[in-house]
Image (cartoon, rainbow, N blue to C red):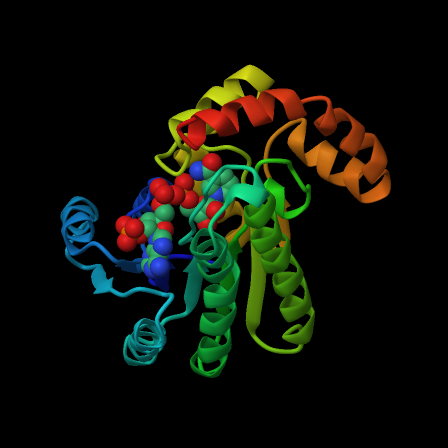
Amino acid sequence: MQLNNKKILLTGASGGIGKAVATRLSDAGAIVSLVGRKRGTLTQLLASVGTQHHLLVADINSTEGRSRVAQHCTEKQIDIVINCAGVLEFGLYEEQSQSSIEGMVMTNMLSPMLLCQQLIAPLKLRPEAAMINIGSIFGSIGHPGFTAYCASKHGLRGFSEALQRELADSAIKVGYLAPRATDTEFNSAQVIALNKALGNSMDSPELVATELIRLLESNQAQRFMGWPEKLFVKINGLLPNLVGRALIKNLGLIKQHSKLSSGE
Ligand SMILES: NC(=O)c1ccc[n+]([C@@H]2O[C@H](COP(=O)([O-])OP(=O)(O)OC[C@H]3O[C@@H](n4cnc5c(N)ncnc54)[C@H](OP(=O)(O)O)[C@@H]3O)[C@@H](O)[C@H]2O)c1
């Protein structure tokens, strides 16, 4: 898909990956509607990418916020929607609050699902359209310390796969991008320390933006990022006990870092 002159709505625009994606899309000649909850951050981003773009302050977890996003998509004749908003709380599942679990499932899975449903009708009016959901490698591998987050991203991946197949006879492409750990404020100091202790690499948000553009420009429905992470995704699908044994060996380290997270 050609991106020049495409009208693209991007949730999570004020975040680390969102800013890099907005910049790359702007460079590719697209007109981007930047969605987030913080007007100040969005205004700064708008000033840096250019005033031909648009800004929309909306909380995707509210019915009213999603309705305004849908109305904006209709009014601006949006061609492509990128669901990039997300939240993460690291810690042992038994210790997480109900509101933290609800927040992850809502923001990372249910709100993008509800938004996609509202946007199918306006996107069907466009000659060429796409909905891209930003998942995670943790949408394919259950990782201790990230249980609710993994659940939300597994759900988002399954949703994207099914919807892609359901809309295969339409002009709407549904895509799913799975980054590995990325250097943004999304990851707390404890998660960064854990990644370091586990020897996990971190990508730049610019690399994620490049992969997203590749996904949009290709006929692929899914892209997984990072080596060896994308190999682990395949092995976990075939031999989950093998990957499980390797991850369980790290349980002590994960618990130690989760204690730092809960301030113990
Ligand atoms: N960073 C990583 O290591 C990593 C790895 C794999 C996948 N991902 C995925 O990549 C995506 C972007 O992550 P990031 O690293 O850019 O995170 P980030 O820097 O923390 O940004 C998160 C973005 O989500 C927005 N957001 C959160 N809740 C929202 C809500 N209720 N309504 C509207 N916007 C909301 C935030 O907007 P406000 O400014 O309004 O809060 C912000 O723009 C997420 O889906 C994440 O799961 C990240």
